Image 1: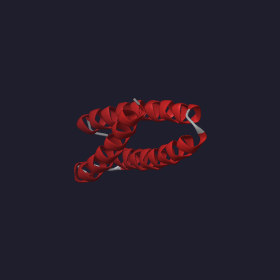
Image 2 (image 1 turned 180 degrees about the vertical axis):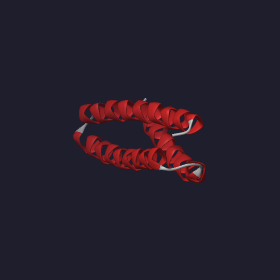
Image 3 (image 1 turned 135 degrees about the vertical axis):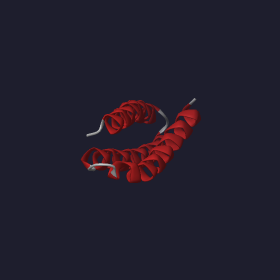
Image 4 (image 1 turned 90 degrees about the vertical axis):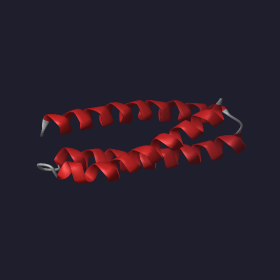
Length: 96
């Protein structure tokens, strides 16, 4: 892996780990709210986990990409990252 790609992948991995911790915290909060609201939040957390899994898959694709091909994959990875980030931030703001 090139040094530039390594740094990029590591930065994405760090952010993905952070979001995973935030999703875990949201899941715990969803378990604490009233039953009717809790179910809705649990469904939203499940959707966040699906988006997280898609981001994790993109990260794996970047790791496996050869040569400069990873540069071509950055746009798709960043789109997945942006979507996940917005979703996590949105749910966190609703829990406050």
